[in-house]
Image (cartoon, rainbow, N blue to C red; front, side, top):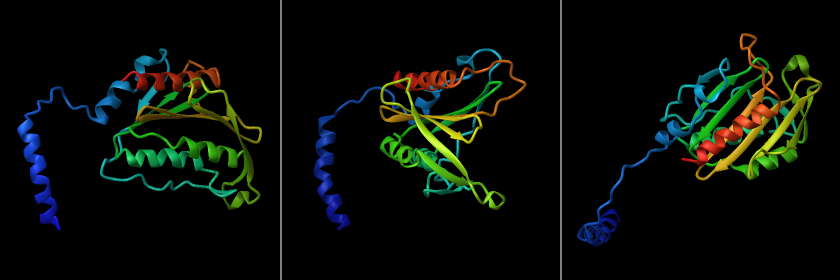
Length: 218
């Protein structure tokens, strides 16, 4: 069967060679695109802390999240982040992400070489509009978490606020931009050494939108 397939391809290869088609230009690899579009320290106000994370090993698929919590309904504790991990696995290590610290918040932004499953993100958000997460045996009763859609700064983007009791909320953003995508999360874990404060959620959404716009300009 292998010999038959190779033999069938020979006339096609001869035809292509005979056409003598000239292809000009330089191939652009996904990793090169990432380097052109990812926001850097220069894109943020002086005093804001920026840290680019090292790229994962391209030969290693994304590993299951070891910090997955039990939840009711099941799968709510990490349902949205699982979508991001799967996109990163499909990107074979060519994705990149960075963290930005303000005095009152930390932003984690990811740029992916594959689209996110936004339908699944929306489904998880709806199914997990209210769920109970269990952080360990010492907290057997669990804690109630709510997921609420908020206005997206860009058409096609999905933005959410998650609250856990009376604590400060967490914000998330997801958007597909052509064949690529952007994911972002804001945690209320700032750095007291940083003198710049973020207006929340406005600053977070502005940064996420700026990153998506930069990807769209590639």
